[in-house]
Length: 501
Image 1: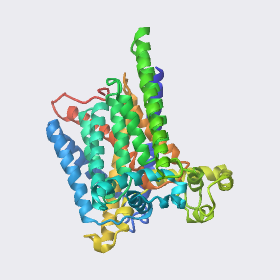
Image 2: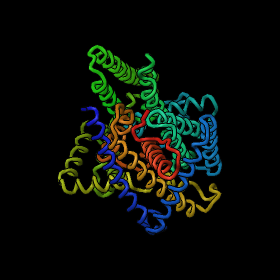
Image 3: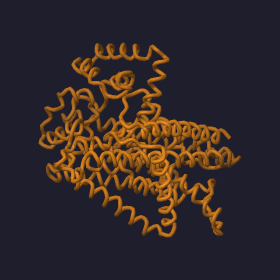
Image 4: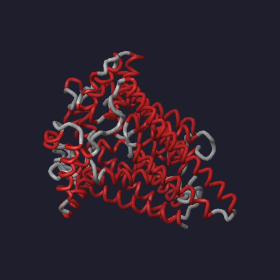
């Protein structure tokens, strides 16, 4: 009873989040400034969504006639092919933080650690994790950006595979197929293939861990070790560990509660809880011990002067509560604080700014509302990082037209994903269930949304969590297709809402 109540509460919160996001997406789609001068009419939006739905369901129907092997191979070939084609077509330069991390990687490969004295790496020390990874690749294959980007394509493809496996395990085969297929063709994910970002590898590692949690944690006595290591390595690439660990902890607590509604055998219940508890402790211990060993290794080797952490954690909140930039990066704040040395004086100055910015509660609520709409309804920044920063001579198409087309398509797909995810959530809410494996992804979504109400926002930060949205979308598609098959054909074989693996 308690488990069901908590799970349905999470579903309800996610429905609110996605509905709110849907409103923000609609606002962005109808705002000509958001789409670089391309105004979208209501009829265009409706027609676009309708055509998208039609294509999705035609693909879903076709997928039903493909065996697992054919689909799996086709998925890999298509995912790799379209990303490789994009990367070869657009010579996206390495810019911004990505260039700083790449330069550090080149120095690490040469054994030169003087870069660790820079303000960037003495403040955001955690960025050295990805730089170290790049340095290993440079040592093995030479200073070749193509190899680094190619590996990112492999990681992106791996993420698609894990989305398929997770969706098939958590919901059903069709849900997994559609979630993976749609993510494989999601425009931002494709465009980021030409960007040397740490998000590809981090997301791959995190979702590999999620798959093991869903699939193997109760069947393999060493799964906790692999899960903890994957989460630690993912955190090394991109420091999302704290959010994920909290979600995993709550998920395991819900798993401990689940057998209460299935058995009255005290011994069986105790054994189940003990097994789950040991797995949870093992995951947490592995994660924190691995992190400690990594930190020690970086400091002892001289690569870093400090543990891999954020030595100015308040900075993200200073930016996050900036009314003038609506929680986005502020050059004015950067000029004000970046010249101050890390320490108590800077921390106190940042605390004062934060207190001032949250003092007006009405204004704060308005800011949170605007931040949410911008973060979860705004146009994705993939066109900026992949196309806008690329010289026209390195883009084989008209840049402005390509950006407008990509943003329009992304908006249509994003809204369609949101609608189908809401349908899937409503179905989950209405049906009685004994298992709740999907709650892990609901917890991740809720936690990720909440933390970005407080800290700096950029739409590219949606990269990590979007596979979780796709999983819900895949289930929504399977629910609708099941209804259509039963409603309009004589085939009574259906995928019911309650048929969750």
